[in-house]
Length: 110
Length: 114
Image 1: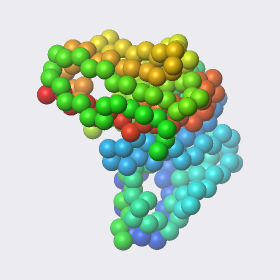
Image 2: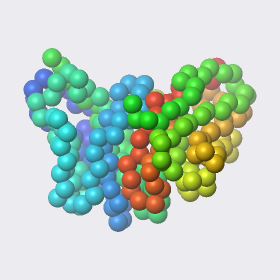
Image 3: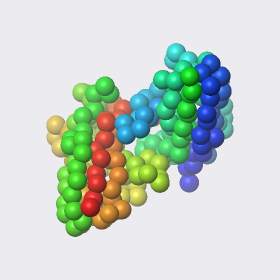
């Protein structure tokens, strides 16, 4: 069964304190790994798609990287507005439904 | 704004009732996905439609059903509602259901069953 595991569950950072979130997956024939940001009570907001090991994508203070077994979301010099739950997801081995990890809730204190 | 529209935003109803949630996908997107998110669970996939046809089913209860219409909007019907059905229901759309295309989510419908 396809699985997505995210760690840590929660991350409390001081403004400017860089850190990384992990997403490990078990799916045969990866057809993309997606990162989303979700604010409380809102729909997930698409951030990045990564397709192959070694690929990197950047957006403002966020950088996503991909290896054969896991992906990292690096947050550089975070600001309070980066506080959110970050979700990663992969399509299934046999279909294109997204399986989501439980998410990492990031809190950035000023 | 993702371009995916869900109505209503909030719904409060009694146990045993039936409700319909509506989703309009982004212009040009052929795939619609429905997800349920409750407090103690993450995003749980319910069902996927592509260009009017059902493509994949997740752990969707028999009391729940969905369809995608010729204009590509979709409806999720929930019947014989129970307290445990209270959750956020999200619709997402993507251009294709045939590749790992990124999906864009609506703002959700918050269903409260009392």
